[in-house]
Structures are given as structure tokens and as C-alpha cells.
Image (tube, rainbow, N blue to C red; front, side, top):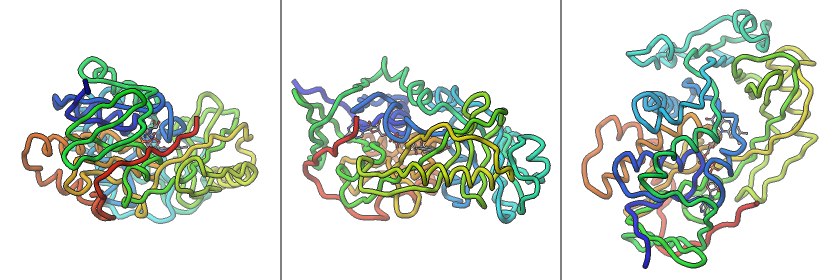
Length: 384
Ligand SMILES: Cc1cc2nc3c(=O)[nH]c(=O)nc-3n(C[C@H](O)[C@H](O)[C@H](O)COP(=O)(O)OP(=O)(O)OC[C@H]3O[C@@H](n4cnc5c(N)ncnc54)[C@H](O)[C@@H]3O)c2cc1C
């Protein structure tokens, strides 16, 4: 006897977990399948989890604003946000952004969400970690902060464990696209559904041929700095960021990165990673000896050619994509999941999207790359 569902979600990183939870909220019969632990593999395992709204890509920013909104008015969003510490975020720029770029305040809580320009001196006074002598403005986002990505992923599926099905440590051997349904084969049996969402992060290529994503390393260096940095700091001039990692520790982004077809093939040049992170930390803070390196966090994510995720139905078939979150998937996960869940619901039950949904989803439509062919896919291997 084969178990059958409305939707199979493949991949239980923070994105897949949110998608599965959002589908269950629409009363769909959902199974979430991960080869490892929900939230405990892939990019979500390593993520720094900064949440913020300002983004130089206005379509990404619109999706982030949508995400913040859903964090207060949906159960999946509230569960997700339970792990976020709202500390505010400082974002140092080379040039002042257009005023309208900062008008992302929500009507009801505009003050906490709206970004404001503050002086470098004020940002230094508040953090001790922004170079007061640097050039360019600083955006202060009081509603931003950072979350525990693993906890968010697990929090959103608590309800799904009762209303749907969660299969952890479940390794699919083959994913078969039958044109009007999907069958996932395991060692001893299979499950089927009318559609499936591929949310396998940097392991997407084997499952979505023709929709290229690449795996890119995202190394961070954990530094002991002997003081508490209260908020995340992003600095576009230094092309880096730091995120608090407990009392006296920060994690600093390194640009010594690599790219490959999948995560297994990524290289990490430890010396280059550490040297680069130290140099960037000195640039962010203006203090050459701000922190001492302790170790390297060897993260990665799936990237698309334009830095925007692939979100939506793949052609007219039963597959939907929620991959390619390009290093910013935590802040987008709830918004992307709620939009994608509505698309899946319409495919199953009919209905028309609102103008706002269409506008929000259009820039992320997988069709901007290539069409996909029906057939069986070999599942790419994952490191243990
Ligand atoms: C160091 C680092 C810092 C980051 N900082 C931030 C930040 O500050 N803010 C932000 O917004 N984002 C940040 N990100 C990005 C963000 O963490 C990712 O975009 C997000 O976690 C992606 O989630 P995902 O669910 O798409 O993928 P993943 O978390 O990679 O999950 C994919 C899942 O699919 C599973 N899987 C793979 N293949 C299969 C298969 N065939 N069958 C079943 N399961 C499968 C894997 O086991 C895994 O659990 C950071 C990432 C890293 C690495």
C-alpha cells in the first residue's frame, strides 16, 4: 500500500520546513521529507540568521517586507519568529540610498520597522563595532535582529507533526515526476502526491535539471572579541558582516569563497578565509585588533545566477521550486513559504492569485531560467 498526500516537500531546511508548515495551515495533507534532521543540515545548519529589510534589490526587499508581515499574522510566522532576538541591525553603506528605499515601515508598527539614517558616530556609540571615521551613511533598522535558524525550522513543524507527516533521516532513492503526480521511492517503499516542492537548498540541481543553481561556500570566522557586540553589523564597503555569537564572540563573514555544482565539491582554504575575515573585521570596526580568530564555520548555500531564489511552479507539471536562496534565505523563508503554499493550493484546488501575490512572486518565477522535462531523477549524494 502506497501512502499518498496532497504535497510532498523535499528538504527540511528552514525554507522547506516553512513551506510544509504553511501548506498544512491551508489544510493540505503534507509530508516533509529530509535526508537528515529538520533544520540541521545544509545552509540552515550553519546560518548566521540576520533578519533585516533593506536590500539593494527592491524585489528582494519587497519579499523581506512580506516575510516580516507574515511573522506576526500567521501561526507559521509567529513560530518562526519565536527564536528571533530583536536587537536592531546597523547597515553601513558607501552611499546614501534613495529615501523611498527606507520606507518599508508597516502601517501599524511603522516606527519599529522603518529604517533610519544615523551617523557613524551614533552607530559606534551603540555598538562599539562600527568605524566612526568611516565614510558613507549607516541605516539603523530597529525591527531587525538575528534568529536561531535551527530553532526556527523546528518550531514551525511542531504543528505539522500532529496535522501532517514529518520524515527525518529518510533518504529518497529516486524522485519520479509522472507529469500529473510525483512518486518518491525509498529503499523499501514509496510515497506519492499530486505535487512536490523541491526545497533541497544547494542539492537542487539533480532534482531540477534546467534550473541551474550552484553551491557556494559561505565561510564565517568565529572571533573572540572580549566584549559584547549587541547587534549585527553589515558593511557594504568591507563587503562583510558580523553577527553576535554569545557573550564576547562574533561571527564574521569571509569573502574567500568557492563555487561548485554541489556542496560536496566545495573547497575551504582555511588560511585565506581567516586572513580575509580579519581584514574585513578591521575595516568594519576601524580597529585592527578587534577580535581573535577561534575557528571557521564552513557554511554554504545554493545560488542562482541573479541572486534571487527560484520560487514557484516549474512549467505546468507537478513540481514546485523553493531553492537558490543565495545567502539570504532565513529572512525570506516565511514570506516565500506563504506565497508558495498559496500557489500550490491554487494548483490543487483552483483560484486566482491577488494582484499583490502576482507582483511579489513574478521576479522569482523559475521560468526565468529554463523548462524542465518530466522523468526520473537520481538523487544527488550528501555529505554526512
Ligand atoms: C554561514 C551562513 C550565514 C548565513 N547568514 C544569513 C543571514 O544572516 N540571513 C539570512 O537571511 N540568511 C543567511 N544565510 C542563508 C540562509 O541560511 C539560507 O539561505 C537558508 O538556510 C537556506 O535554507 P534552505 O532550506 O533553502 O536550504 P538548506 O538549509 O540547505 O536545507 C536543504 C535541506 O534539504 C535536504 N536535502 C537535500 N537533498 C535532499 C533529498 N534529495 N531528499 C530529502 N532531503 C534533501 C538537506 O538535508 C537539507 O536539510 C546564511 C547561510 C550561511 C551558510
